[in-house]
Length: 320
Image 1 (cartoon, rainbow, N blue to C red):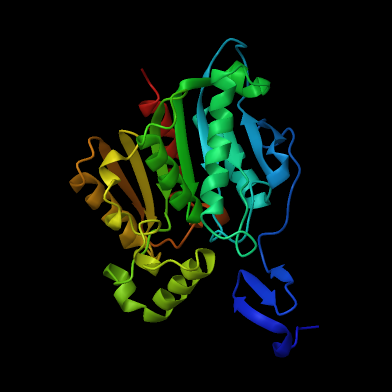
Image 2: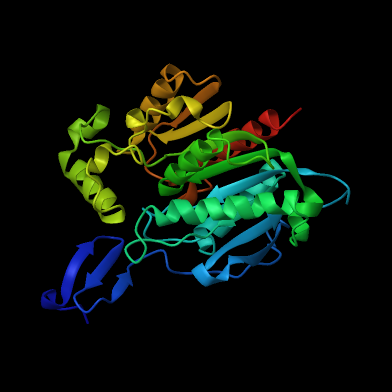
């Protein structure tokens, strides 16, 4: 039975429904799958708790081990979902990480963070940073996670994320740039259709004011109370005076041709170059594709091309 309109305080379709009695109903992205040996890829995964008191956890992946002494690049991945839905344990992210770990031959840590509306931003940023620091502790302090200690190379670390996770990835790299990560070397960052935005429309945003208004609402729902709203540096890097201190020298931005946030990815690459930052940023555009197409249609040619490009990026930039 559909809920009565009188019972609903707010709807942000297709993500979430908030009821007047405080109940929150997520409308998608709630399915989970267990870790283990993936029969299609041969990749192994397991779940670990990082800060149980905050329900902060992660799913770890290791590639096929043929040489026990071999060290692999380490990927720390941040899932998307508008800061509201999805998790590392959902089928779409579990399948993607299995494929990426196989293709790139990396160790991966897929981070779970608390989500809006129960936990609005900046909590997701703080949770994600706590996960990054937990990974670092396994290198610095002889931590207890064997997969990281045995198989991951602390000098070849990558951050990556899609959509809202791309936004989080950007924030994690900015924190690295402020000198807060001495125990690992951030070799590169992958921003897949990153959630960047702004008050004034640019590019294709001008052609779709309805979607522009929706994305405005999505951001304000996830991070309420900001004086500058969609022009806050949290979502509009152009407004961040510290952009030039971005914490790595190699960046890959992946955008989709039919995505409303496509031009924000291209614009980010331009403002990063002009910020005083010293490094290399490349943009890959998948023509004719929509937002996070690579997750929901992984067998299409553009998704295969993107998987290879991301894999090549991590292997090339991870070389000494």
